[in-house]
Image (cartoon, rainbow, N blue to C red; front, side, top):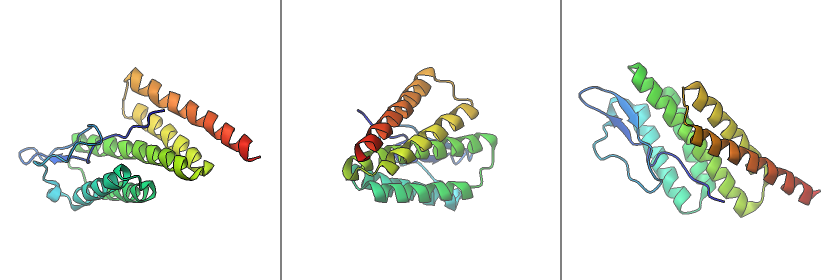
Length: 166
């Protein structure tokens, strides 16, 4: 089973000339865009820093810390004040990508402690991810198929775990 995470380092790219925010989607190992200038919105700067810290925790198998930092990043993104519809869409996409990442971290943490509540959280988060992806106009059939397959797989794993503990 492969668990992936979305958006590398919340590369909040704030283009100086247009003040537009773009949230880069990249492999988990990618670094933040060095040209980013999130200083125009402190909430974005804080979210980027929290995301990067959480990524380090994720990469070093400290999933609980990654989850906490990514949850904080979500809170900071809710405080962001996008100036355009494009920025608003980008921030919403970043929030949704973090939800996906938290689900992945919950799933990885389950492998460490076998707490079935983690699988239930991961499933709920992925269901939310799909809902928000579709609501935002996401129409990549492969992406939806992969996410829904993970939701189904998590459901089966939850059932198995609950049977084993009964």
